[in-house]
Image 1 (cartoon, one colour):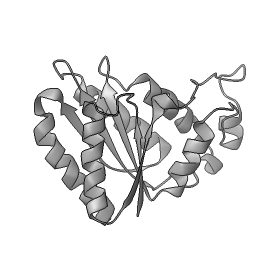
Image 2 (cartoon, rainbow, N blue to C red):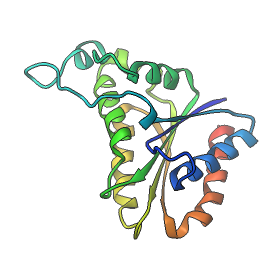
Image 3 (cartoon, rainbow, N blue to C red):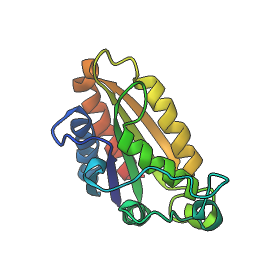
Length: 182
């Protein structure tokens, strides 16, 4: 099994990266091949709402016309057997980099061609809140809604707060094993 972990965090040593690494370690323990991608290191623009109706080739062809790193990352996601979406929580919401990626992905997934290789693919979300941690559940609800709109077979969304990170690392390791075991 191949698992693609998409992180909306810039910090490869931060709380979100630690949470994603725990999930990846669990998946690897079950024999999965895991690749991690840090979105802020890529060039992914926000949706431009290309035509006068706020759409474009996303709706008519299932692909985005913006020439950046989005299409390559979507190709990696389609080639994977499962996707993991990990985000730090800012203002009870997704990180800006994950939001930009998913905003464009869900628009293309409204077309049959855009759903190819996405619809039915197992996915897990991880939302890691710093500060007081209160925004995690709201972020998890947003991530769940977006991933379901894309057509993923959403297996779980795990909210984490910095206060329970150590405990949740064990949960995420088990989640990775469970995901890889199918």
